[in-house]
Each structure stands twice: as C-alpha cells, then as structure tokens.
Amino acid sequence: MRLLTGIQPSGDLHIGNYFGSIKQMVEAQKSSETFAFVANYHAMSSGNGGEKLANLTMQTATDFLALGIDPEKSTFWVQSDVKEVLELYWVLSGFTPMGLLERAHSYKDKTAKGIAANHSLFSYPVLMAADILLFSPDIVPVGKDQIQHVEIARDIAIKFNNEYGDILKIPEFKIQEEVATVPGTDGQKMSKSYGNTVNIFGEEKKQLKTIKKIVTENVAMEDPKEFLNCNVYNMAKLFLNEDELLALQNRYTSGGEGHGHFKLYLAEVIWDYFSEFRAKREHYMANQGEVREILSLGAKKASAVSASMIEKIRTATGIRY
Ligand code: ADP
Ligand code: TRP
Image (cartoon, rainbow, N blue to C red; front, side, top):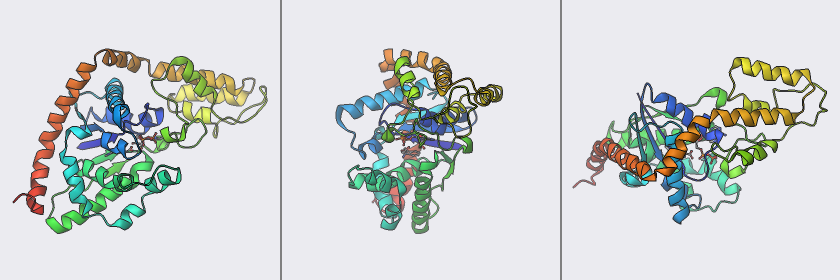
C-alpha cells in the first residue's frame, strides 16, 4: 500500500495540518510505503516567492522531520527537486476540461478572498494531479478541503488512460472523520489564510495569547457551561484521551470555572503534547545541513520511482521520438 501527501510551505504549521494530515502520514509509516513532499511549486500560486519561499521550504521540511516523518521509512523530498512533475503537469493539462477547473472550490474560495486570479492558481489542481499520478499512490490522505482535488486527479487520470491505455493508477482519498475539519480560534476551519490558527511550534507566551483569543460563549463563572459547541473544548478534544475528556466535560457542566480556566488548561495540554517534537526541531534547526542531506537523498529515492512512470508517459504520448 502506497500513500502520498504534499504540504505547502506557506507558513507556520498549525494543529489543523497536524491532525488533518501529518499525523496520519506519520502513523502510516509503520505499515505502508509513504511518500511526502514539500509542495513549493504550489506555494507560488498564492503569491509566495523569493527568499521567503526558500526559507519556508526549509522550515517546513524541518518541521515535518521534527513531527515524525522518518526519512528511513518514508520517501521525503522537495517537489521542485523532481522536475518531471512539471512535464507531467503539461501532459495532463491536455486531459483537463476547463469546466473541471472552473468548478474547483479552492480557486473560487481563494479568489473570493482577494487572492489574484492568475493561471497558476487556476491550474493548481492539474499540478496536484501530476504530483499524485507520477508516483502511483493507492491512497492520498487529506483534509476535507482537498477531496475535490483528488477527485479531479482521478478524472484526469481516467481521461488519460482512455486515450493511452492503463498507465496511471487511479488514486483514492482518505479522511479521518473525527478530525475532518479542525476548528480555528474563531470556530471556522483552521487555516493559515483565515488567521485563526494555533501553531504547533509557537513561542509559549504567544501560544497562550492565541488560545486566550478563542471565541467562547459569555456565561457567568458559577453557571454550568455547554461543551459540545465550545471552540475550546472542540480543540482540546483532539489531544485528550477518553478519561481526560470526561473529566473536562465534568468541569464544564459543574460550573464554578470560566472559559479562561479551560483556555489555560488547553494551552498546557497543547504545549505538553508537542514537547518531544520541539526538542527534535531544535536539533534540526541547529543542523540544517543534515536536513538538506535528507532532502537530497529523498529526491533521489523519489526520482527512482518517477523515472519509470515518466518513461511510459513519454513513450505513450509520443514525446519520446
Ligand atoms: P491552510 O488551510 O492553513 O493553508 P494547507 O492548505 O496548507 O492549510 O493544508 C495542508 C494539509 O493540512 C492539507 O492536507 C489539509 O487538508 C490539512 N488541513 C489544513 N487545515 C486543516 C483543518 N483545519 N482541518 C483538517 N485538516 C486541515
Ligand atoms: N494542495 C495541497 C494543500 O494545499 C498540497 C498538495 C500538493 C498535495 N500536492 C499534493 C496534497 C498531492 C496531497 C497530494 O494542502
């Protein structure tokens, strides 16, 4: 079983990224063949570039390694180090009806939020299809927002195969239902672009400040509180085991504590949860050469896998002459 995922180097990683994607990938390393890459070409479509993009690429790679991507078990690389993906992107463009891209939520959402509507933003799902189809994964683990992109990849692959034979593997997506959409500090989907994130590797004081901003109901200290729709509770849920969750529910329903108390507790829980990862991150931050070496080996491993696919595609499409 082969799994593949990409993550954009577009900012600090947040707990939505962790529970929606990275954690599944790390767990999958135990039993599956896992492919993970830093999607630096994708980040360009939202206007990132220059030194900032270069730095974010290294930062994201460092964070991934700290969070448990193991280069011995996984193939881990930077997207732009395997250039064949751009070749496949072009080939697949010929199998992508305009209507398919016009229906893409992500493009519509991003342009509605004021991101400039340029071609790379529009054709982004085709590049994502190339990322996936070049490596023939069985499964692409994603958050809900990315399902449509995997469906587009499937549609494109089917069209290509109809023309040239059974070359591309049709991928499936997988979401973890209970954490399908991690809520942000305002209760909406947590996302870098909405400014409502709780970052994984924030400074402790800043982290607490962010958590204190979580929107909660205005209820008197002594009164019992509703936990089911509480943004603090819904975030804490991700980190707690059953007993801890029951204990927290009790604190809500008994009254006598304000949301400020629950926020302090949440901040502590999150800080402890990521403490081991923080230590690993400090190691890689102090040894960026080691990260570069890991990425370079990863790109070699990834290229070895993509080579046979790109050969088949060049031959089938007549690019190989
Ligand atoms: P952002 O929305 O902050 O820009 P990305 O689009 O870079 O995040 O997402 C990277 C990965 O993390 C994707 O697989 C995405 O589905 C997942 N993800 C992002 N935000 C969430 C969330 N709030 N809940 C669940 N998964 C998420
Ligand atoms: N589009 C994904 C995101 O924004 C990142 C990504 C790029 C990706 N290529 C991919 C995810 C291939 C899975 C498979 O989160």
